[in-house]
Image (cartoon, rainbow, N blue to C red; front, side, top):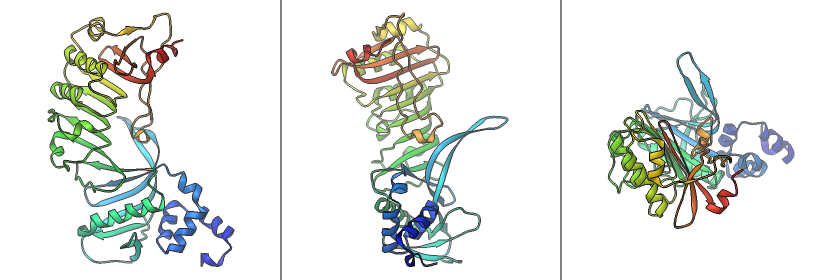
Length: 359
């Protein structure tokens, strides 16, 4: 079937009934085809909110559009799965054999493609030595085809770390023990999110503390270091020891003075042992202000960074009668101390605006 023989409306109808993976493959064929797809499928392309890349330890990767995660229940545990619309798979070849493949020009680089029965999308293959340039070409093509206004994510795991340096790319790292892999990363790398275990604190000047979102299990010394040097927006921390009131007080006082944590939106600290101090003692040490107990405080919640990876894309709500105020701009942070949990949520509102939200 030669698509160009049909009237534009028929072409558009045919293209609208194709999967996105087929559309992208077809767009590689020629500049005119790419132009036709972009002009006739503008709405579909604009509806793409983000593109995600993943790459495993055996040299196979995928490019996909993330869709809302789902829960899958088993007899032993609950598993969170991210549903996805596959666009492309990538495979590293061990030799120069090209069984049944065909070449297409992708952002100026010829890349071998094949269609495999067990895949639901085209497969791009390349030699290991061409891996970086091939992935760079694929990414540059998406930047040109979709644009740079959407989010592009590289999901890395420490089984075999490979993180390319690509334009407009955010990196999310999931690792078992962060200490074991951090020194292998580029010194200039700033991550979007880090998930894993952290045994020892990093140096104060480490780029780790600039990560926008961290979800970590960590020891007491590492927790104290995070509460001193973190420059990101969101942190969910689980500590394997009791939490010292001095570390929490230092953190809050530095925020109140405007000395640190200018970007912070949300902090959740869970200790497995608990504090030796009472809730009242902690709140008094921090110097909180109180909302009348007969009134209902507003609920603090913010969208999670990389929230598309979670079934609950927003942070857990903080509904607390206690709060503190930052001296430099009069912004408010709600504070909740309950059992083994300490939560801190920063509002965009000033104290006057915040109190107006109280019911």
